[in-house]
Each structure stands twice: as structure tokens, then as C-alpha cells.
Length: 149
Image 1: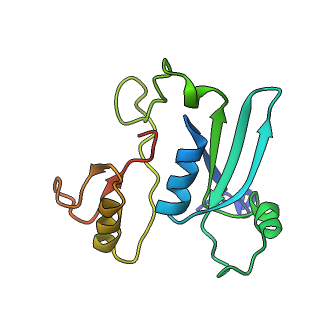
Image 2: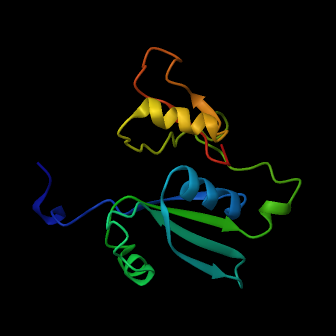
């Protein structure tokens, strides 16, 4: 049993660094179906923050509602872009956590109603897979890769 002092705790968001925010935002909105809640550009320090999540309001929440609730809800992804990485030919990308160096972080899990239909759609959209349904022993999960792998 969890300590009573933690009864109000909830998992809010996780942060991922991205090379190209345009490609990443398109992936998380157009492919995954999340909505951009808000964005902040800290030009003096040369980075930007983008907060995305699923809209469970059936479109009733305004952009202001979504922005105001981003730190009070669960399941938010924060994308952090360090300015200049998108056009730097020497930039090698970030560690995915699934290979050396940088093993650690593994994946973000998203539940879908019909995994086969979702995978078929991802295939049609040209999304890269790390593991397809037909790969390995676990036939009920698939892993797709975002623009940063």
C-alpha cells in the first residue's frame, strides 16, 4: 500500500529531446493523434518546449483549457528542442535507450482499440517499426519509432 501522503500524486509527463520539432510534432499529432497543448520558446537559452496529450474532451476543451490543464493531468509528453539541431549535419541524435551507448529508457506505451488496424495504418503512413506484430514471441505488441528513433 502506498504511503497516505502520496494519495494525490499522479504521473504528469515525461520529457523527450527531439532533433526537429516540426517532424516530431507532426508524428505525435498526425500519426499518434495527440494534440499540441502548448509551446514555449526560450530564445535566450536557445530551446523550445512542446506539450502534447490526447484530447479526451471530445473537442470541448479550448486551447486555453488544454494549456491551463497541462500540469494537472496525466499522460503528457514534453518535447524539448535545442535550437540548431534540426539543421546541424554533425548532430548524431539522442540516445534512444534501446541500444548502447545510452541504454535505459525503453518506450512509451499507448493503448489502442485494434492493434492490427493501428499497425496497418502505421505501415500505410510509412512509420518505421522497431518490432512488428509478427516479430518475436509477443504477437500482441508492436513498437514504432518516432522521427528520432
